[in-house]
Length: 381
Ligand code: SF4
Image 1 (cartoon, helix red, strand yellow):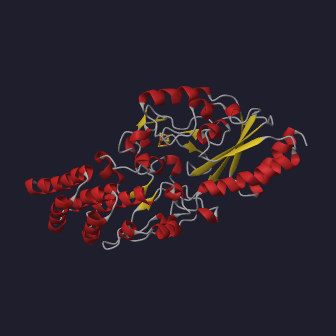
Image 2 (cartoon, rainbow, N blue to C red):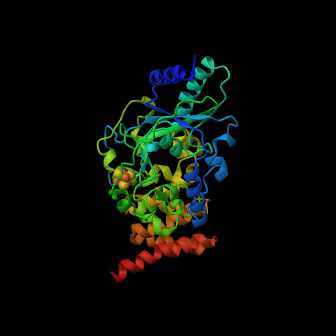
Image 3 (spheres, rainbow, N blue to C red):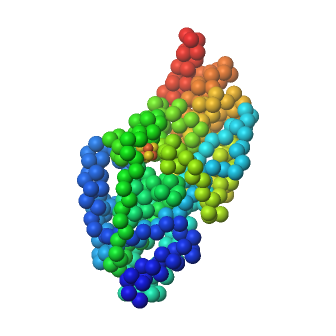
């Protein structure tokens, strides 16, 4: 089988195993990405979650010495749930971003890529390959852009004509010299909807992201969330995809092709109060299979407290007081105090003052003081 026959066979097989889009790219150095990453590093725009050096992220032959091509794949995921759970007063719900609604896409894409890899190796015994999904060094987006999967939007997502930007991406680097696909034309034009909608101005100079300001990143940190971002996350307890939701290319996109990505409402939009004291075992059983659990339960619990505060959920006050008084983790106690201050009942303020007398941790005391400043605002209003 020659490479052009193999190319076609790969395209046919990818359809058979439920890959929604597949493209081929050269394995040349990603020169403009390299320059952009260097600028981002200088400006301090990185999240700290990036894997590998800039060279490893932009030079495919560092990851596979004989690299000639990269096969890029995309799988579409839904953007709407079938039933919309009521956000009842007694049972406030948070929300995971859409990319974390179904089963962890890393596993699903890895399985497809592994099948594809075996298919290639069977037909091309000299094949050398390296399979990657998101957590690898290479930029999935840069590869997908070069392989003609979609264009890179000003919101930094890859936007496909068929599925909008609601796609997961993965790739295989190989030593097989496939004929590359042609990249798509930029489709943003003069639109600035995502830049205008971003609550923190994290999207800078169209196509660049200041990861430190990105709310999706902020929901994944483990320390106290800087106060300026807390009210802006609203109900999001993991990720933040407003820059995708406002994009005209996503307007009618809601693809339900993969049962694995179908959201379970009680996981994708979970009740917040029960999350505050969820055990490790329950957490693993309930949320362990979604991508949004990768940082463990603490960031999600912290964000659930913030979301309850943003909602001024008086029905949760007793539970939050208990968390503030008993949780061993300072980030959780302090955020609980902030949340109580936001909710702003007399009982909440009295509990903060009471707990402050016992609190030994300076940062938690600081959060308690912040919580009490809401009372001053309420009194002077
Ligand atoms: Fe491009 Fe507009 Fe979509 Fe932003 S919202 S990615 S500017 S088309």
